[in-house]
Length: 327
Length: 189
Image 1 (cartoon, each protein chain N blue to C red):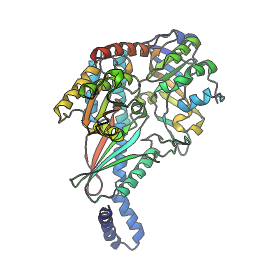
Image 2: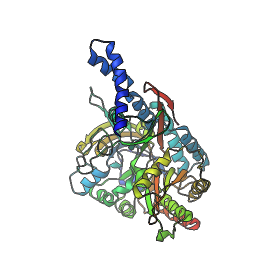
Image 3: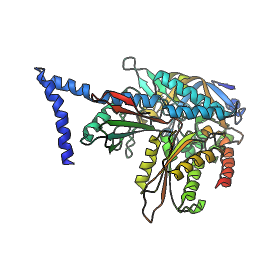
Image 4: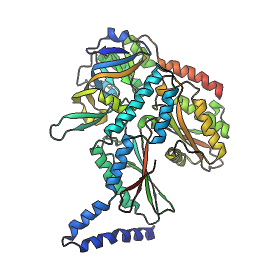
């Protein structure tokens, strides 16, 4: 930890010194340089885009769902409004859904990266994005009920760092609304009411039960992120990270790939449909992974994502500009 | 497609049936968790809610720094079931004709709809831009101390698109779909 900090400090100091030489008013130039090379502008752009534009893989399955519904039904009506909403939000560059949700950042970075500094940039970008209306004032003190109006506070925004072997910094962002977060579930197997044992068939049973219970409330058709195993905390974190996968990818584990496919097909036969109005599409996708567990525990953690599946990502360039969009 | 125009009456909404697609024109009052709790706790509402519609919604509102005018930039429905403990009493005590939300509500509210001549309208969850576009103006705000998403925003709307999923005659689409999907679930477990 100590070594890592040292390296980062050096790396940050260097460009500051070079710039300072060029000017007599050292302080001002340093400030300007920091601003120019800080990733705040790129982060604001990421937040704005994530809030307003659904990624292509999500739009594709929504259109497929629309075409699947029978004509002149409330299900088709709902899907048509959803489609129009996606187009309008993109055109106006405004929040697709008013619940801009928990602001979840996932950062993959090389060794020697200054997490503290990056977190402060994220905070600045989140506050600015709230002022600009890309994010709703969505952070409430759980004890006093007070809304900070800024979207920052204990736990907000939610920032997750992962060190990777590459030299690049990749920032993924997910905005997860409260309606779908509320229908997430965690089961402990064996689960007697469903006769669900400690095997993949038991896992399947509790997942389908969660889909049934989520009807209407989670803004379906939705997408499931699931973790089998882990402790309670790790399971939920992993289940959310499954939602970072592209919808059109294939699980490298054959058994899980089959289960993912089967859950979507079976759920779509339950007749729950868009918004729970009844209809042919209940789920748009399902992503599952497994963590090791203790002999005594067998958790299945399920995160439900609404159709307004807002996730995006950027790779930062050497000047912290957006070099590449990740979805 | 049916139309419901302001001023609303209990007689008008009693004619609506589950499955009706309705375009609402007139006035809506937003009210969600904190508002319902306050009303239920007996605090006097800051506006007369008689014959009005409450919209379960926490909008994104921006205030123009110069003119101080409010503008809605996103306004989809929030999940209604959280108001289940309060909704029927709010129907009884304040004379509303209906609520707009998403996800439907439970038996207590369904009984409330029947007893007090109210309807539950389902707006399309997440469709915040389409719905915000149907809002012509923000006419007033009350109880802003609850925070912007929880305050009562008085909105004028034109052709606000909703589906009746619980009517004043004891019918609930949510109860029907829950039962049929539960039966289907049993077959695949």
